[in-house]
Length: 564
Image (cartoon, rainbow, N blue to C red):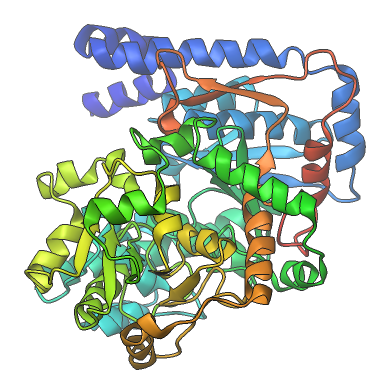
């Protein structure tokens, strides 16, 4: 009882919590309290420059004929950049009388500082008591009866993919791409995860109804309790906006989530946007903007893109071929590995069970085709995510899986490691074709006039520049004959370039009302946790066009994509 009361006091008293942290955890105190509190003060000092005329402009844009209530799903550990962005946007919505609710944790001291300062209304996860929800006995019996991988993967209720969410969460928690459900411990953990999601889903419907929520902001949509919160909102047809980071320090991507956009990649395009894209002319201006974007992403302009290519340089195709002793006329195919355990099963459907089985089976097929010089490109996020160190004793998950399920590879298959000295842009240039499911590399290769073989759906397979297969057997035939592929047509290259321009140049929502900078205590932006913002508009009387456009777009979820 005493410990429970003490915890309750600490969660409500930031300063007492800080003092105790200083005494018992001084290093954490420095990082979490001093630096984060300084960042908090700097941010709100910069927001003092938000003028009355800017507030009035936002009020005129956001004026609507109904009472709006926004729920911002912070969760338990949102990074500072998104906390600051949502704080700013929430304050703009509040000028119209909009109520801003925030789903947060009592233990998330820093984000709760921002919520309190903005006078948003917190809803604490701890108070919702998800585990106390009572489920229908028939549903519980069905979950308990799940046995095989297929049973779990296909378990749905009213179209909500509870089984896929459970598998995705299970995989992410282990930083492992291959999911083994043979032992009873794994099955029980998956069942418990699914039951928890069902309870959160049931509780979420009550939350949305009791608080009369009609608009909701998410980052995560699929794993843990987020997935159930999201699908409950989708079922109620709430105005859902998904926020995603990009490789640009000063931009994000936003997307309205509806039944049409559910389980699509955040940088995919809706049917309407694709139709408009096909009618659009590929102008010299578009080509120049796309070329500049390639240069920026593979240069030093943005910290978030630089982290994927540290200590690399752009070299010629001949330099790479010579470095690996590849004869001039032999074609090169690159298999682009995904982050094998991240948000599985959300983006479309795969020809194989998951990213890991796709990788293993693709490499097996490549081993049967020595007419191609094959490379397996290990995902560069291994450089900075660190999970292979924590979970797999320093071994890359891709290497572990191939060693375990294939063994020694033939000489015509090699790896491109994350510490390659050659720029990713150079590898795109040297490839004759690439193999992926929904990777960004597919967009880039298509725009460069290269073939793209895909092993699933969810991002760009309907655009018109990819080589698709409807079955694993058909996919196998494509790979075995990949040395006979002719170059994509000019029409395919043009549509790929227009799609790449839309993805890289028009999809990002430029935060030109913010200055992106390293957080206090950081020397550079290496990851999203190193990024912070300050308000940039000064005494301007007008909000930037991009922000006004976003505010207008946010009110109507009939337009899925936000394109500039």
